[in-house]
Length: 154
Ligand code: SF4
Ligand code: SF4
Image (cartoon, rainbow, N blue to C red):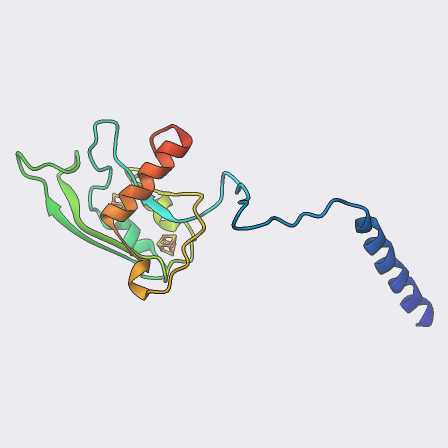
């Protein structure tokens, strides 16, 4: 038993020493920000198509699959002269309560028009509860930022 303890201590010391001369990996956040993995699941975004129409057609599938009930969609019909999406319907109201979101990505997978995506943005802290309600315009803004950042349509 004593032998095992001594071996465990030696193993621990070896591990400590192996890191002793390595360069520290501390990142001075928020002055410096780390790049996240391309598959990182950050803040959600809605996007427009190449012609500027909303990709979202208000089908509500994202809301149905969301395990946190974080999404609310209120759909309406597109009419001649007032068309928001290329489908028959569009999302008149679209809100995601990011405070409830667990970033599982189910909504993105379920979306038939690829309107929803997850951005690399991870800074969402706020003092006001209402700031976590991301309306359609805020989600479209996030999509714009993603497009700018990646130089492609989100
Ligand atoms: S990422 Fe998951 S929890 Fe968040 S809104 Fe989408 S389905 Fe809901
Ligand atoms: S984001 Fe996608 S799944 Fe959700 S309502 Fe719009 S089209 Fe349907």
